[in-house]
Length: 292
Ligand code: ATP
Image (cartoon, rainbow, N blue to C red; front, side, top):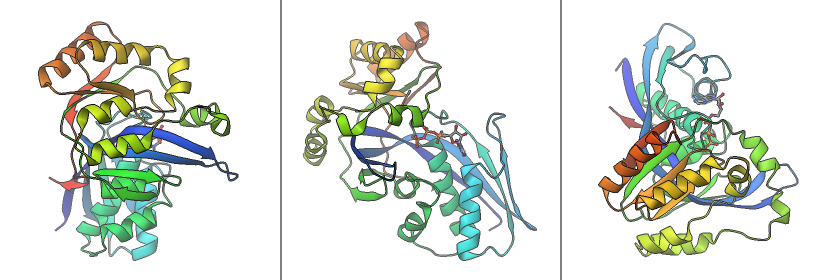
């Protein structure tokens, strides 16, 4: 095999709590991660020597800052590569959006190199190594539905939540994850989302119970700064969403719908009102880093 293409899936957070700020400056989180069907495409080709990356985004160079490069270098240093590799990225997941786009590209790089060079390393082992590239990368290698704790690297598998239609809406604003965490003042929070209720509802296959418990503590910062987030949520709910919530540190908002027509109606309304630029109707999935 000389070439391989993989779909690197995005994630949303079915609830997000920040438990506390650690003395190290990192934040201890408690969140449910869920893979969705929106993906970036990564193609790997064996070449004579070196690691080269090509992307279809001018704003995202394929240099050593790209998480794909960091993952490929770490893989090479740890397991060795018998030849060089050229990696091409087609970006579909909105960037800096709270959907782990960079982390999933890094995850797909570990999985892709493992498959292309027939190294036979388990996803569990790759996942353990990958935390050096980023706290969300281990989850992105495993995918599915997981409770994520610690700084994001302690993963507990959960059953898949009841299926529904997911509308993704990213407003045309840029949010800095660093700014959001710094302005949360995690150790002074009076209220925390009830993540145990979310987990119990998922375990019980109770979509309504899950939807009523969903909360993202980071919305107290991003939502206050950008009222468009609340307006998108209101529009989704007016169109029939059972829940509408910000993912990660934002600004992406997702809505959960029982009926696909309602998700499509909300998508059209958000476009019409110019509340969001990037809009996708998708679904939960339990697979990530899938060969095509
Ligand atoms: P998270 O949900 O993990 O917070 P995010 O969606 O907020 O992720 P990303 O899209 O992963 O953010 O990217 C954050 C930054 O990382 C970007 O601004 C970009 O400069 C840098 N980056 C490096 N490599 C990549 C990549 N392959 N894809 C996207 N961003 C990358």
